[in-house]
Length: 417
Image (cartoon, rainbow, N blue to C red):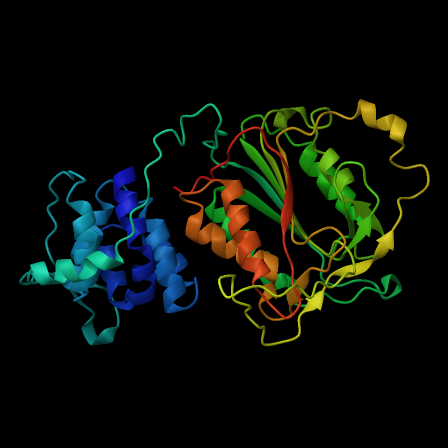
């Protein structure tokens, strides 16, 4: 689908997700060859009607130049004329080649068996009033012609874009005195699906000890990334406040032993992972930065509204730990490679608690997933992370503010095509 077609579809996205009736569309989409049976099954597995509508709109962008006009014809044949008009207005300037789309009627003998199609009278075209009624719902995205071509934008054109490793520590040994991280599996499922949609090859490791975490990270760093454009590491675990030189904080393995964030990051530096040289390396850390609980401060009525949570959330905190004796010696700093092309996104400010809901997952991952879904097609990574910080900061009785250590040299736009 051409960029202008994608813009028309994205402009109507919110309304499509809210109003689209997906059930009558499946057989038409199959009969028109817009999707295969496997593709439709995948969309139907997304969950609720809204989830299926959201996935359908996302996948539609990958179905070729004529996907949008064919989809509009399917909307009309299923009596979804207002949505058809909403998209038709966006199509008028796209200069599509003529499409011979003949309306079809789906017949299932006795409700079972094969699907047969037969022509029937076309539905009436949308009226001018219907078109005008849909205009307030249109959202126009600004066109940034330099977005992809600028020398200050990372190229993410490989397929896949890169590897994404997710370490999901849920169950901790009794000797560790660390609680079970109920809700973390929800986080893992969300972020796994999200980065697959962003064209990453995703691998998940569950319940790793500190030593196993080191092995998994080293295995990823030793891979040949020459043909790839990016690398992502997501860590979901208990964390703590730790002494540091470059990047604050540390992560616990399921055995209670720990590894510092800066150690994790440095596995992927220029000397240890040369095939990622000059390419963005992104780290997303869902873990506490300490034990402090932020009660926030009073703000005026123009500030974001506080959204109370239905349940008392849990934290991923353990007490402050000084670095082991003999580690991170000052005289070793000069030999460390410059941490270029690295971004570390933390779920919370160093020293503070990171909150996690036992049913819906952590505030940070839930918001990150939502922001990527809504805005990754138009905004760069740093702008997306600003949205995450703003969203998380408005939650709960206690407060939390995500942040990042940014050593990227260019803007980064995820591949959402």
